[in-house]
Image 1 (cartoon, rainbow, N blue to C red):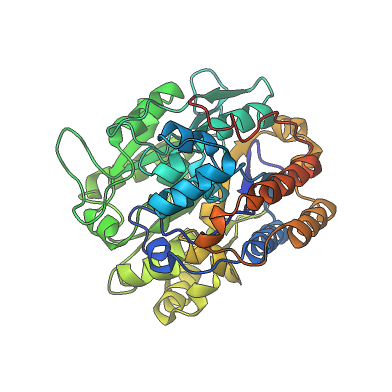
Image 2 (cartoon, rainbow, N blue to C red):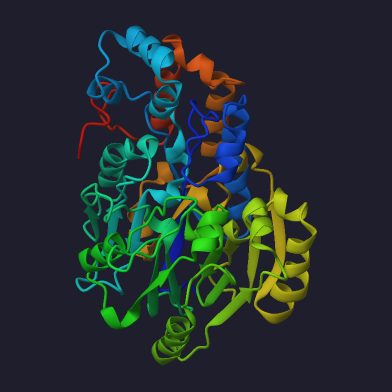
Length: 453
């Protein structure tokens, strides 16, 4: 039997300007590999193969195109003058970090595109999406304008409400669904929302080594905008130790699917009472016990969890099947303690029937794993049917996309290459071809694509 709601993964396609700029705030993998030579073509194909594995495991999948880069508008707003070639040269000569930022392909990590609440949770019965402002990072703060336009096109059906990003400010910094989870019964219609934040402006709780990228004021604002019932909405403070160790988002140390919640012991700070309330409320609403696995630091040290991205794996299930498969990056298989957790804890005490592994080394080296690449959108059968077929997974579409990657994506890309104006034409040609395959006509260009929203 098909559930009343099912989860659709909208995966962000890797863009032709994928490179290692070391731009991620508090992201150890991003910073470690900064300046190395990237492989955009291989990265894009790896992303497609990840989606293919998800489909084979029963997931519904759709595509999101890469954004148009570089952001020439940003360079002009920051005081550079001249034509495109002159803009790139000035940035390269004076601030290579800024040059990298305006070329960044980070929209591939669609988990940061928005926060999503489905209709059974919202006061008006509609599915709400709030575009993340991503104001913690210069390179990501360029994205929301294009994301807003894209989502207004993709989620045009009347049962969706698309909210503009929150105002950009320190208290309202918002990084999207990477800091939000929904726990539900088997129908997907009864459940609770969990928001995870990294700092609380009123009590001063914050990390010291790295800047916390989600504020509680932002999480509370999104919950209000979506009309969520306060009784079914919970807020958890991310553990400073996790942030300091490189867990810049909750989805680096926690994951969930339906009634299953996996998290590291140091994912949350002083959370025992809140977690107990979550478990009690879940049972009251659904009549089902919440299956929660807390992995201790002795089982899997925080540093290993962040390095291998076990918790950034995707829990996947078929519509009619209560068992689940965990799709992990290959780095998990290379981490003995992580494999031991899978075998001795997850498989023996929960619905996990197995674990599969996928090669995502290009994305992982830039700081994003399997779950980072997708935005989960709960959809009704009617909403799914209304989604354009051109955006849904098919082998034919995947093959067409890979043909574009092989033909138009560079095999390698270094930061020094980004000063070459010829990359602008090459990048635009690749994104144009992808949009044609996906049936999108977004009507923007590099001169206006990132205007303030």
